[in-house]
Length: 178
Image 1 (cartoon, rainbow, N blue to C red):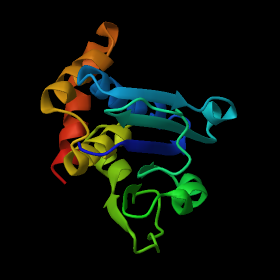
Image 2 (image 1 turned 135 degrees about the vertical axis):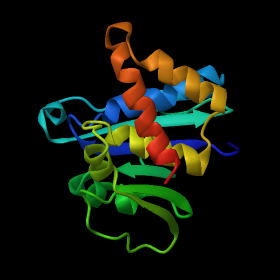
Image 3 (image 1 turned 90 degrees about the vertical axis):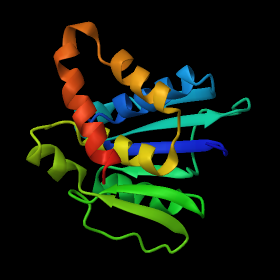
Image 4 (image 1 turned 180 degrees about the vertical axis):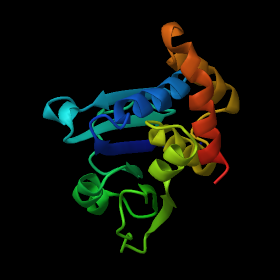
């Protein structure tokens, strides 16, 4: 990773948006990068739109709030509609094409359509579309070292939920192999 990443992840409450942001931030922390993780709480937790800002840099971060992301992960249509025009030119957009049937009209973005929700259901990974999206994002951006990616995967799953580790690994691998 050579440039600062200002990442905005957005979707419905319950899609694991905040967990995905925490995973990315954890990877950056292991790599000893400057980082911020700013979740959006409130009525979003009950099925409305939820979002999370993650900044990763080699330099000090001035503000944890991402207003104009250079990486945007959209997991539902309301979030896509709300934020797509705020993305900086020449940036990356990852769209869950299972839930968002619109195409990005802007020609100044690198867009990846990932059928994450459908892939999660088809592979018995219900609830892990977020990790499929992160896997794809990792493949395209290499936002951290391979070592940090693997270490954070183990760290982010609490011991009492260790049975979920293999499911999360499988979801990340699905995204990486797209």
